[in-house]
Length: 315
Image (tube, rainbow, N blue to C red; front, side, top):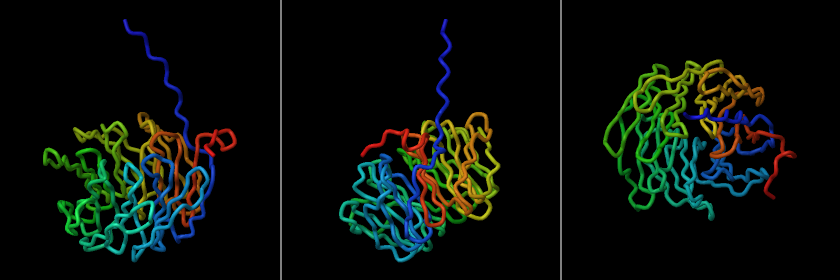
């Protein structure tokens, strides 16, 4: 006879504002934690990319090389490289330490909305308003993509890569899951233009947000809808959604100045976090801790599960 498991602790949610960073790079188009969660990356409408310390909120480096506003960024697993994309139709591979452009890749026919490294940072994947995802070899001197995925019928808004799987959201209202090892493509029709896609941390589910102000959780293998989350406003902007560090909560930006947290299983609204009076443009959840980054206009907010003086901080 098995004894019942003890009830797990109620997950802590990052609802205390620890600090606000004035980014001074125009509107912040995207905010991202780096791979280990110790640094913040911000994409500016002033063409710059900036690297910040999370614990102090200090600027560590500015990366300049794009010709128009920067829309997305990703850091390699070892923090040695960054990849970014822009409305200037290019993807840039950066050396973190020197701040230099390693490679500038052209080929997309329109603005590039999203970019990601694969796990080993040997490939960069970029998705564009031109409806294609291009895969670039980070180690090669060639300036052509190694693969182009062009199944979408409209612009690519979001992409995520996990091991051999690639998840793509498109304005055509479809979420596409590519199994690159098996050469298979699975398509889920949502109907409304997709603004953001992501994998759950356990890799079993996919999350997608769309312009019908709804976030949906799907079973990755069957495509079955597991949950629908609504109450926020997402009608005109490309807003981020994500899962918390332990897959307990679904989060979404909102055009009403809040971040919404829903209980993943029950679908109920757990927390409506007031960020400000404008659109919450972007968010990023820490890989292992209850910490959250939000971006609104020219500022980034760092949120924690407890106030700063109660938290033991490094340095």
